[in-house]
Image (cartoon, rainbow, N blue to C red; front, side, top):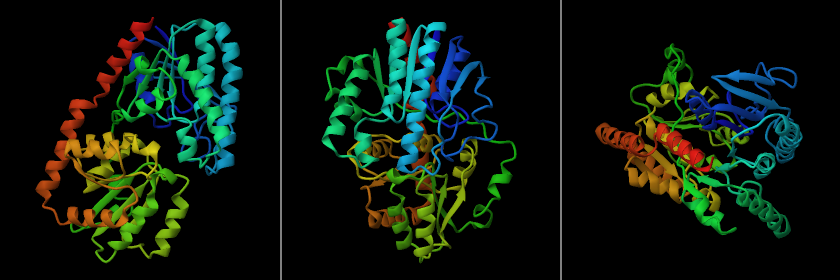
Length: 409
C-alpha cells in the first residue's frame, strides 16, 4: 500500500506521526511524508537542515520530502502566521505537480495547527480518487479563539465553512478525545466518520550514558530530602504556567519542594522573569530543552509529574498526550486542568487534579503529596502504568489504523 502522509511536523521533531510512519514502513507500506523543514519548538531550522540541505531524505524506510517555510522564530502571532502560510503555499504548489507524477492508495493527515494545511491532502484525494484519513489533534476554529484570541464572527464563520469542506472530503476522522466528537458533529453529519483513536507514549531508547543527564544542574545538587515536581514539554500560553509559578510562590518557604521545567516555548522567557520577580531561584529551575529520549531519565528522578492547561473550552475537551507519556513512566501525576484530562487521571487513580488556574489548590495538593508516604506515591505511579498498558498501547493504534485503511481501499 502506498500511503502519503501530510504533516507540518516530522522527525527529528517529536510527534506521534513519526511512530505511524515508521511502524507502517516496517510492515511493508510505501510511505511518503510531505512535511516542512524542522523548526519546532526552537523556532529555527534544526542543525543540518536548511532551504538547500536535506530537503529529501530516507529515514527508517520512509521517504521524506521537506518543503520550504519561514521559521516560526520566537512564536509571535505575525511570525506564526508567516510560518503557517509559507508551509501551506509550499504544500499546495508542490502537491499540484507531485500528484501528477506519483500515485497513492490513500492519504493521511496529521493535523496539529493550522487547519488549512489539510487542503493539499484534499486536493490529492480528489485528484486521485483515494480515501482520506484525517487525524484531528487541534479543533478549528476553536483553536483560533483559545490560542489566538480571535472572536470576530465573520472570521470564525468563514473558517467553519472551510472546516466543513475538509470534513466533507474525509473518509474517516480520528479523534483522541471524546469531547472532540460534539464539536465536529456540530458542524455537520459526521458521526459515522468519527473513530476514537487515543494517544500513546512515544517509544524512546534512553541514551547509553544516563549519568550525563543525572548530573546536569539542578539535579546534580538535589538531595534525598528534596521533592521534585517536574514539568516537561512546551511552555506556551495554553499551559498556563504562570499559575504554577504562583503555586510555587505559596510553597517557597519549604525549600525541599523543587519545581523543574524542562523544555522550551513562547512563554519561557516571561516565566524565567516571573521566577526572579517572585524570588523563586532556590526552588524553581529551567534547565533547558533536552531530547525526548532523555525524558525517562529525568522523570525517574522526579517524585511528581505536572501537567497544566488554561481554562478554555478547547482544552477542557482535550486529553494532552503528555498525560499518557507521564502514565507510561510509572510516576504519580498532579494536574491543573479541567475536563477529560482530569477525568482520565481520576479514573486511572494515578494522581490528583485541581481546577485550571487554581494556584492555591495546586500548592495545597502538592504539599499533600510532599507529606505522603512513598508507598502511596508508588501505588499511584503503578496504577497509572497499568492503566496505560491496558488502554494506550502504540501497537493497538497501528493495528486500528491498518484496519481502517484496508476498509477503504
